[in-house]
Image 1 (tube, one colour):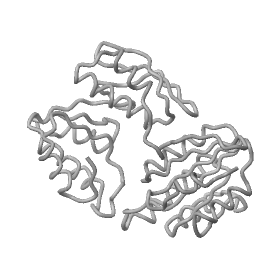
Image 2 (cartoon, one colour):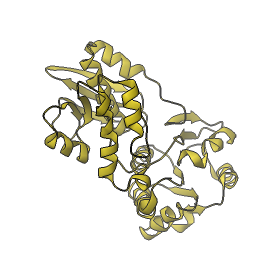
Image 3 (cartoon, one colour):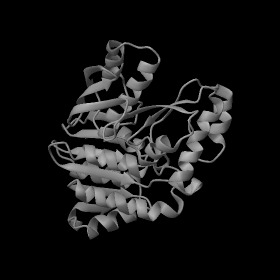
Image 4 (cartoon, helix red, strand yellow):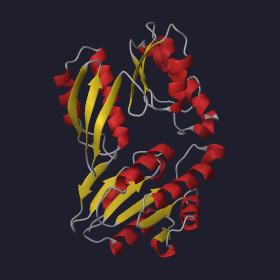
Length: 294
């Protein structure tokens, strides 16, 4: 159930009447509308209002969900999953690679190895979440393992294609928040070859917009991205911060629109490059992926 204002999940949960609920994260998406991460938590917890059993699966590694779990009303039953925090469903022996991950999944006294066909720590968390839900609904560990190992992502989410000249394009243009930007940039850093981040504005951040775009700039430098290309008014803060953090100005480009991004990419991409496209959906960066012909 999605929302960007108070009351929206309340309407949906009272229609659906769920018997089991899940909250995967409390980040900064829509913080411009809701004012704080604490309010985002409050808005998401509306999902329990339509759930008579008051059962919820939560990401115990998230600071606000962890705090909620410790302070919650005794009538609310939680199932926790996580990597860092002690949880009912958790991962060990994690091996992260550029396009996949492996780990040992622990559920109660059972454990089994799982390979996730998509890269990124956040997809390990998502897999643990799926395992927690599957176990609660009575699936066997074999069914859970198969489900995780064979799932396919929504288009425009970490959608990896090989271009004609041999370069790889990661189309993650479906949407963007600071947390997902950080995860995608981190994943880009795992690849061999020249790493090109094409980043655009994140929307609905309100007064936090400048700060969160600056934090993206820090992540670009911290993860040793080779070339940074930005478009959008707020993304100027990404560039400004990347320069301040020491990135070579010759490797930073600010352009006006998608066509200029396309023209630039077609001039600079070589066969060993890995290109990430990431911005809020309203920036329509997926059009770049559709038109890129190299």
